Length: 146
Image (cartoon, rainbow, N blue to C red; front, side):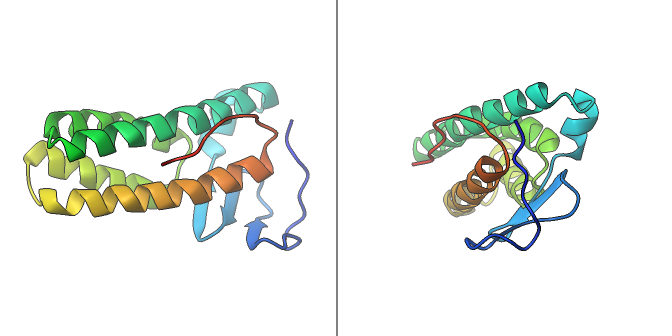
């Protein structure tokens, strides 16, 4: 069930824009218009997809991080590629750009020393996305990123 939130009424710094398909707050913008289009406004399906994203994306970030710590660049590449598909439906341009860079660096084995910092940025941004989606949708998930 989608929560009703009025623009500019959040004390925690998050702002829900007039378009319910564009969420903005904590320095992050999440565009879920493609999700609404795919779901044909089926709220239950939308909530399921949001829940699935919130449950699985931290696992994917964890795989990328673990593979990076082991210098398993093929796994970093594969997991980053997988993450991009989620970020194309729950569109978060800032994170998509960073994950694409992680994927590209791992695939080409270039600028590998930059990957750990990029992973940390994705983790930090995900926490903001999690807060934003959780306050906008009635979803029950465990979604912490370590």
